[in-house]
Image 1: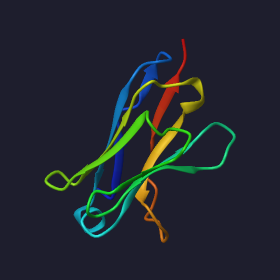
Image 2: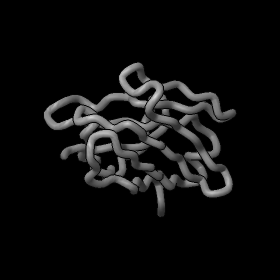
Image 3: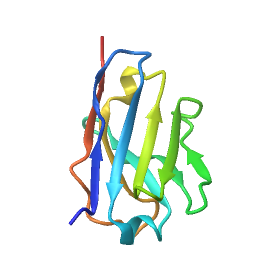
Image 4: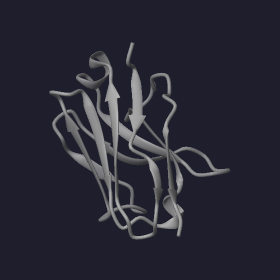
Length: 115
């Protein structure tokens, strides 16, 4: 079963771009506001961006203007377009429902921003 499967991370230079994808189980994706979270090394997991069932996005101040969250109901997939990446964006990125109760966390996808 799918649940939540993230992909698209990697090593990128400062100023570069990545697009993360999260394939979710239909039972989760179609009935929940969704979110992207990240956990930098040695820090707590934090919400980066959320999107409602109707596509209204909310972006954390730390990434506003650089990150965009979208969702595709045909593919049960959540996306995070990340532009102008900075070293401080380095983290493991996860998707989940926007609000508690969270579903079981996936393995995440590592994003490393370094020259």
